[in-house]
Amino acid sequence: MTSNMQRVASSLLMLLTVIVVPLSAGGQLSPQPSADVPQGWYVYPGNKLKNLNEYDRRCFNLSHREWKVSVEGGAIQITEKSRVQDETSSLPARLVRQQGMTKLQSATRLNDEWLLAYDGGEFGGGLWLTTEDGSDVKRIFNSDVRAVVPREDGVLILSGLAHMGFDSGDATFYSLPHGMNMALQQSIRLDGAPSAYAQETDGTVIFATTHSLCKITKSGGLQILHAFPRWIAQQYPNSMAIAADGSIYVGMRMFVLKINNQLGEYREEWLLPNECQKFSLDLSKLDCACKP
Image (cartoon, rainbow, N blue to C red; front, side, top):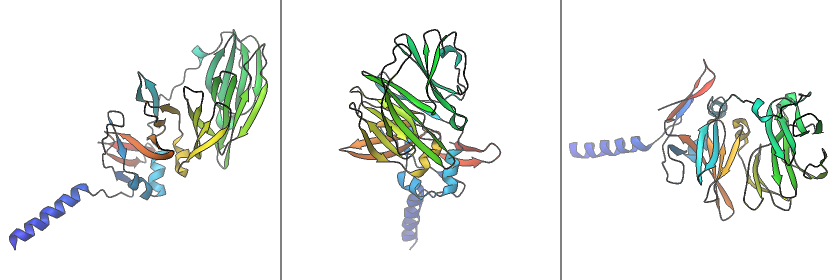
């Protein structure tokens, strides 16, 4: 009898070591190291994520850590995104700021002219065309600009705003700037405000909206590739990178999202750094704090 009881106790102990129970004010994460994700990161168990309640997901939104993804030397790099943005070094020397020039998103030089994109959210933004030294400025349109993507035959502008109950976005095509002019070629309404994007070698542009992963083909057509869970909009995607194997990485608050394309089927993997084995809401700092 004693031997049987010992075997039962041993079996129960083994089960307890692999069971992870979500906590109401946080979670215990089960590491799943993989050679397919960057070193120092692991995959958050997808079944645990689906079972989390709104309180836990609110914790993710309040995280002070924001991740930026890029490709360097053919490998995916993940770094912590700085909250400080220095605009001065990117602007033409004689530029005089105009109303609406709030929060510079990008400064793109095309030939002898510049495209200055601003995204001030609910406070406004827009796209300006300026001469090389900034002495002459012309506003192209008023919407918040999320990305400026130069193409062989023109420029793709991703713009829009998601704020409170408002959520709208557009993909707009212009001709290349010439003589302080750009001709509008085409505009496509999106299913929500766009955010991070990446450009493939064939000219295809992959980007995220508040609702889905989308593609603009080289010919200018729009394709919706994959629907996102609703809460991703509150994680504010900021960057996107495409790995050598075709998988797509999206940097955002708390997580890095990896999207694998398997014969046209897109599968999500949510990545966290290895040192983030537990998380809980720190009310004193309003932060979703990670712990070893």
